[in-house]
Image 1 (cartoon, helix red, strand yellow):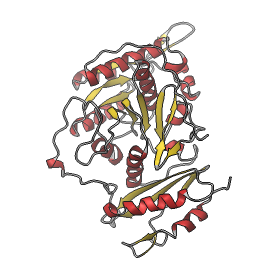
Image 2 (image 1 turned 45 degrees about the horizontal axis):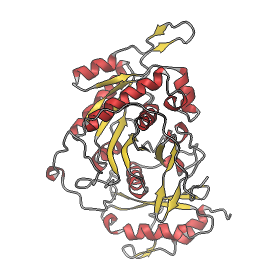
Image 3 (image 1 turned 90 degrees about the vertical axis):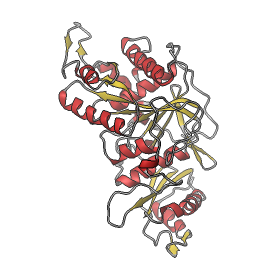
Image 4 (image 1 turned 90 degrees about the horizontal axis):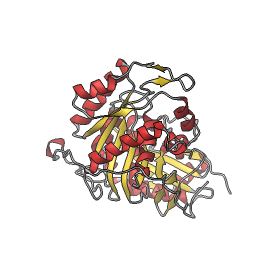
Length: 395
């Protein structure tokens, strides 16, 4: 198979002409360095904000042009925008977005039967519920919690997806045992990967695992939105979104553009983590996303040999915070070597030891989350069987 390189891509894009700029796409300076991973190409096209809404055909033509090159297996071209002043700008919308004061308040209950999306929101009609797993700061085990929550929901007999929205630190591919796999395509849609009975999508599938993603805020938001739109999601009962840590522009935009049914906050017990967790909780409430509850991760350490219990980071802080802020407390997950080892191995604890105490703790959290979304109780069952891989699967 022919190898694709950056010069070949840029040379091909010189055949794509922008009527608005009156020149070819490369000469506009809008094309950022393509990211090449095997036969997979990811391209950012950063355009002036005022032209953004009219340039979707240009993006589509660029994508088709690259797809025709020898050696290209799949391509994603992302259209994003920047203000001339350098201020952060939202990516160009593909549909009119109502002013904030015109948007109807989000109701506390989830939208059942598919997320059509409100004004300015991304439409996800095949997905019944979208749940964000978030943290105020990094390093609290948010991604591990998101993956195990998704797997525990799958054990309830639900059709579950896991979307990795942490562009700068996409750890979901490795956690889910998919770091050496690449998604396929069906027409102009990306076919997500699957493992352990959960459908998975991440920017980590598009770039080399150790390569840094050096993108500004608008490019990050544009990439996330396009990944959500361009993925051929199957029918899902619930999608878990592993949010980036913090409460910045990316997190806020995701809350406003993705039709979230609710959010789960992950924190460790110490005060500094809980302070940031409270900020995250308040952010979700300000944008009228229901907070489904708080999880206390690394709650305590219990020696596997002598049984002695140590509360390394303190204990009970998340429960106390939940009570003060009138939010549900979902449960405690201990600091345990086995959770770390199974996560690194791509077989999270819910899969590796489904009958163990830690998997049961995640299972109880999943049951509470599902009941909060639907009002229906669900019982833990057998681990879901692996679905048959489609023939267009790329390795």
